[in-house]
Image (cartoon, rainbow, N blue to C red; front, side, top):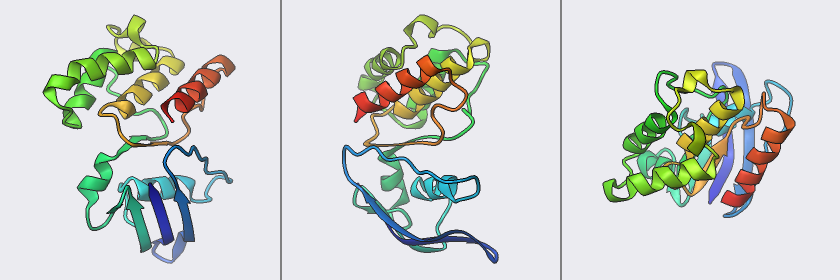
Length: 179
């Protein structure tokens, strides 16, 4: 599903990621561990196509990220660190907006949105403004936006940061269910 082959990322003379290689197969859940500044987020940003690698190859579901970025990116749902949301939208409006951005088939859009709201436990708050939600619910809204369009690959950067133990368990269970 994801192949990272001899990937390096440099910013000028600074090497952020140095010649890494790994493969992630379908159904696998992996975590990138390391201290701050180790290159975890940079690696995720390269896999998602947000930034380009300096050297090496990244293949996502058979598509080279540099040669066929649109096809590769279509297979990925990405939840960046920091929960970037449009806080003046309701939960349902945000998820609908994400469906439009990801060009979800019009016939399937309403059903897809409803399914995602149920999966992420957002039905009861779907009509609330995001800015009025707790951190845990905001995290769920970000996850819902990531799931729109049923991507084959999920890349989650710090999906449980700032959550209480119960919310952490719920997010981890959701990730396992999505496997």
